[in-house]
Length: 333
Image (cartoon, rainbow, N blue to C red; front, side, top):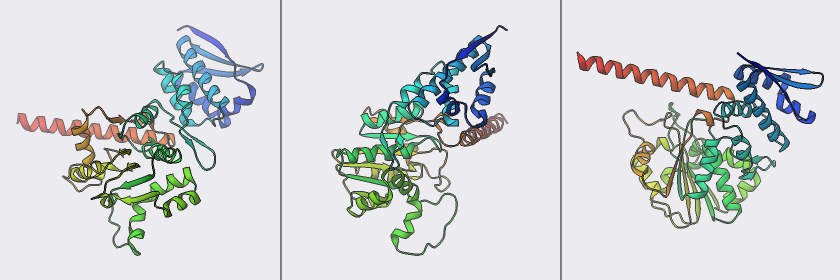
């Protein structure tokens, strides 16, 4: 093993951001890339095997560039920069950061944070209909709503329509008091939350009262033709094939439709086919429809969420292999 050493050039004003609180990010990079990072005589030195040192330097170059652009470096940024360095794709994280969709009401830029998210955003710009499929935390809904708000602000569409099937997530909620809107609001709350964050509550309320923004359960889409609208169907894994067909055939002229869903989190009754699964199979050969599959690498919530997704994927794979083994044993018997 040949040990080498290299000096990092990180401006003092960016060191705290790039190193993390109590040097958390330094320890993460050291562990992931098997290097030693030391501050000596005012210099930051990286020691280790040549290839690992090279990757660590590239990670710091990318994180420093993100910091220069005004980003607050997060654990997710560090994890993703490390992952890309191991695939020799480090500079992609800097290119992704250039793509700002819009700004939240607080002024924070909304932009893709992973290669998968960038592919998703580009697909939404290019195609009339896009399926964004992936696990929790990959930004499927949030990025779609950001694109919808920007299209509305640019007067590319006259209306934003957000919808999702009203299905309980594995528990019976029983009788809900209030009028019809009060009964369906709990199902639609995640969509409201994203709109409030991007538009602000006052702006959202103003456009909502004018009918320019509509948040409604999927059943309300039947019988309508949706022209000049940006339409988002969320939680599409909980649709039936007939509901999905009904929804997709509502789309009119000058409209854009985004369908988001997580194939692993179905709340349909046992034995019911998901409309999302059916649509992905039936429509995959239509060139004008974009299908983007996000995965655990695109999770941008707390890093623990990525680990949870990965753990469930492994368990599902074990169960699948176990069922296959049992089936094979029964067949031979």
